[in-house]
Length: 86
Image 1: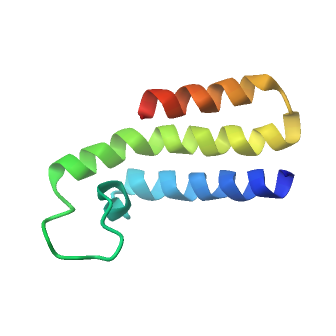
Image 2: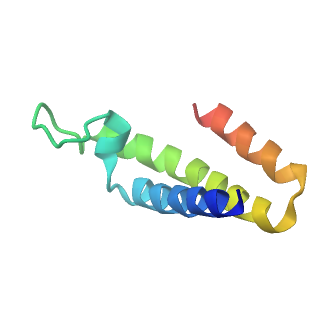
């Protein structure tokens, strides 16, 4: 179980950093295959990446800290941020 949490935590950290940098915005738009149906790098998508990136980073950090600490504080923090960002 700890290996799964570590993998998810690192994945969330990487996704959050890429969203904040303005990369991988196709994942936010649901365009996985790179179809050229519209401009994904519009101002709205970049703004969404800037808003969602820090929340995903904190969720990834809370998942990795949950492995080492085991406190319920990290669970509440992660669930709360996922709820707010959703």
